[in-house]
Amino acid sequence: MASPEIEALTQALSRLPGLGPRSARRAVLHLLKKREAALGPLRAALEAVDERLATCRTCGNVDTADPCSICADPRRDARSLCVVEEVADLWALDRSRLFPGRFHVLGGRLSALEGVRPEDLSIDRLVARLEDGGVDEVVLAMNATLEGQTTAHYLAERIERFPVRITQLAHGLPVGGELDYLDEGTLAQALRARRPVG
Amino acid sequence: MASPEIEALTQALSRLPGLGPRSARRAVLHLLKKREAALGPLRAALEAVDERLATCRTCGNVDTADPCSICADPRRDARSLCVVEEVADLWALDRSRLFPGRFHVLGGRLSALEGVRPEDLSIDRLVARLEDGGVDEVVLAMNATLEGQTTAHYLAERIERFPVRITQLAHGLPVGGELDYLDEGTLAQALRARRPVG
Image (cartoon, rainbow over all chains, first blue to last red):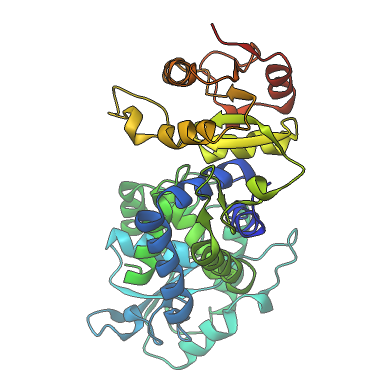
């Protein structure tokens, strides 16, 4: 048998999405063969992330600074707020460079099946941000899934009392599609054609 | 864009076999979401492997001790030596618990295409082990690939002057198959029916 250290590393890697026990073992062997070129950099990168990264208390983004670089960027339009389910969605939209405003990460989506209730998401923080004022438009950029759209509906109701334009991403999202997997063209179309709720 | 730390971690992960840029990003997000349950253990496991593991100077296995636990195990039959291409193959055979002897890891296979020559493999160390005596049988457990079989032929010629029985894994290996991907039953059949070379 391989040593306990190797077994532990194989286990830790096999729990990553996309890796099973066998591919994790392959990955471990690769790391052992390329200690300087692969194991060292991965270890250093993990340490850096573990030690330096924090969750932005304003928007929920993960960054080295709190507030994060997006919240702190004066060139970003603070009047426009894009609400997304996950940090991955924020990154997907940010990579497309199509949205000039700021973000709000919910940390998930409402789900009866998984028992995710409104109080499990950062909805109160979103409401607080709107109460602080200065926001003209809220873009509800949920995934085009049943749960994403349910969440968008719920959010629209929760914030309809604020004097803000509430929009959602336009058609262009394929049904059942998730933001992080879309090509930039589709994202651009969806963002450009965003429309008021209700 | 995500922070440089996250980009670095994504890059380091995407270089692992089986992970591409997108699945690496998914993995990073998973790690960020589960810092206690996933990132911490993975970091600790990498550190332990990086700091404690060494290559056994006798057989080429990777372990916490040198000589490794297999070479140091008195219950292992030192008269029987199984030569494999990679550490992964050693682990595959060892997991099957079918081979009671010791191992010798070549560190690859002869390959004109990849420019791997005999002096790039630990063949001299194998010859030295045979010169030390005490070995009755050498099992050439190369992969059933063209390069694996070429390597086996070359090895058989290099060590034919020693008074040892030279065997190779029997039919049972599918053509083109690699040891680490075989089921235990096939491995068992191949090992049980091993036959003399030439």
